Length: 287
Image (cartoon, rainbow, N blue to C red; front, side, top):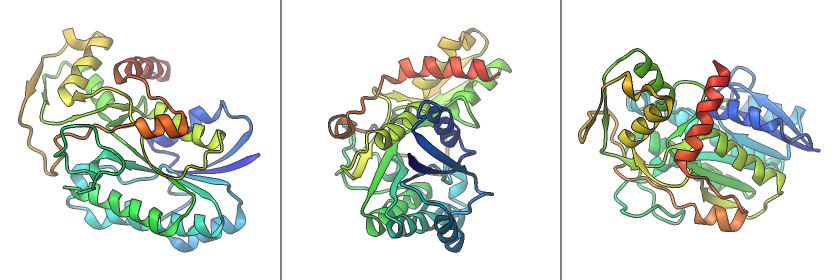
């Protein structure tokens, strides 16, 4: 039976992995939160690996607040880079395959066509820079790894764009949403399933991969779709703007090309609009 460590168990992706893990009875999972395993502390990571044997480690832990990262640079780099280096070094020492989740924000957004894994990275904010540094730590210290970049992650859990739009609409708040950025909303449940498929199929084509749902949207498109499928479009006033002031710079275009993960690992993403409907049903079940 494969032994799998999952860090960041209390985050939205960690919770989605926990849900998906119920369908893999031949895999033994160990889920850890920050309190149970502080990955920013190398000694704690090495001690944990000495006490337990893992075939795989999924790093779902991350500092994800793009705005706050600008003023909390040290913390962002500690969690997204230094902690990743701790995991990469320890996984390498124990011959544990590391699955590390990264982001479309490692790119600067100047492309006009979906980003390939081989395209140059050039992050334009602290969050993106810290995530890129984490990628480099994995590449430099690990041989058996999968770096999976994703985009615009949301789910039925936690604080995210999807849940915020529903909450504000239910309160009848008017919403003005930006059209400045184009990317792909990605269901964290789909990403969780993709990560577990990599493990279940014993994939060994290591390297960097892109996984997002298919299609593209602006944040306004995403908001409109959420409000339409929930029926909340009638309860709130939705407007679009081509300017929305943020503290952190954001890539104007960050659609990811997923051809590599489809051809090399036989993982085919579904369209973001179709996937959105499944998250709505999960949210209803939660509430």
